[in-house]
Image (cartoon, rainbow, N blue to C red; front, top):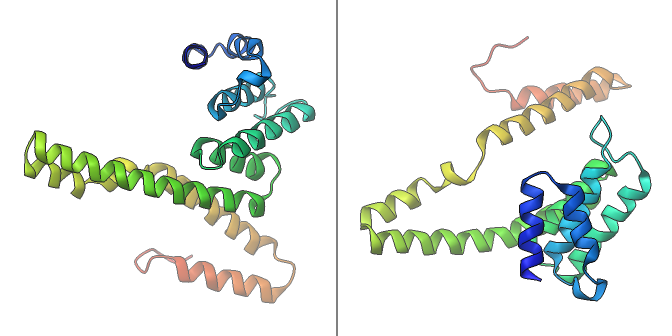
Length: 194
């Protein structure tokens, strides 16, 4: 199983999704309990069916994609990769933030424990193998290494654009004033008002 997964990962890194999917399909269904292999199958199916807009051209592929992800989560409900992918499926393809949110929250909770253990262990290893200063430096700068600030800034911009759009299209004046007050309360004090 491990050699199949290694080969599939290599094919996917080379953007050979059809060959990767063919290899996965040769695995007997009873031999595919690992959620990572199921996730790879779902990903290949999705990527091979995308249209120009980035959505699966065939709705049946989307249903199969979701079914595979739910199967992988059922096998290992603590496997963060499948939780995140299923959450994005609900959020992006189904436009259902309410279904996606608990999965993102669960993934963050699991990941938080795992990343804390990894940070703690690496900080201690650096302190022991290099110097105490190296361990402390690593622990002091860890946020800069983990968080992708550009990605979060893009997300913040999208959310603010959504809110501004809601202000412009609010049906009644009370909603418009409420949104505008909320938006203005989020603006930094030093930015110019328009």
